[in-house]
Length: 99
View (cartoon, one colour):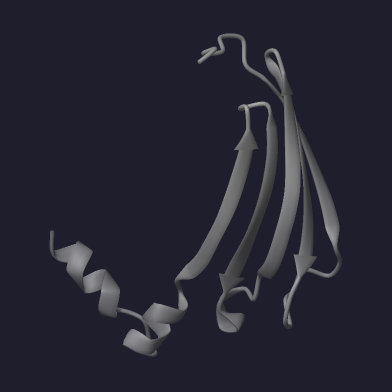
């Protein structure tokens, strides 16, 4: 139990540095008939702890047990991510709930 509480104050820079170790992310998704998806989001990490900052947008489509997703990542600010990138995901779900 003691380690849970002491870990929040062990950074050399004190609480200010502890707080900078947090990363923040959020996003939204709209699903149409649980088969078509549109997504957007943002990820932020402190410049002294990795400096990953990016906006993302994407879409997905589901046909029976297969789902194809696409995401486009755009770095913001002084992010260390060097360029824009595209991610594709193909997913197979053998047992799908048809609600």
